[in-house]
Length: 163
Image 1: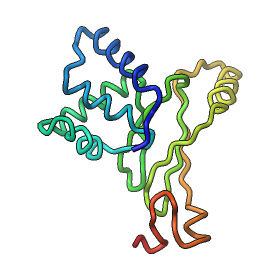
Image 2: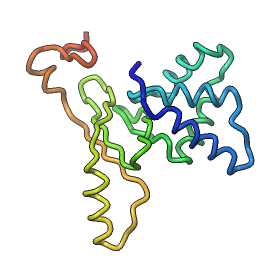
Image 3: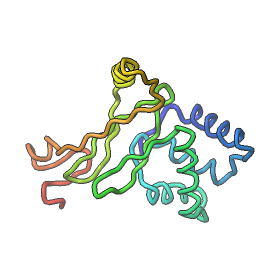
Image 4: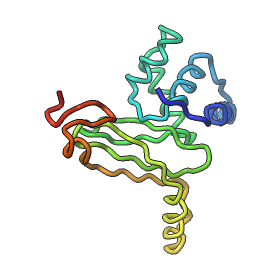
């Protein structure tokens, strides 16, 4: 699992979100949040549950979903529609509200893209039309050039037949 350098900043933001609602960031929520924030890759709820259960084997899927919902409300994660409408989640960076992802049509993997210019370029366009953007998301469905050119993909090890 890749590490997100903004974990502590995001944990502070999550704590502030729950405090603002008169709630506490429980030990289970902390585990789920820290596990989600530590990932630089997109994940689904079941993957998050599996990883969080490494620390607490009693965490339930319903608690994961409730926590994901609260993190979305706080603007700390974003939901991405993967292949076959499967929901995936990605951590929003500490310094931008813009997210960009490529959804691989060959394997369904969701790959975050670093694009610091997205928020600058797109917010300018929104301002020209009389809007003040609060959140931006770009989702691109694509096929893997490496997979089709070389017969394998270094991101997931699959070949065109999915073997």
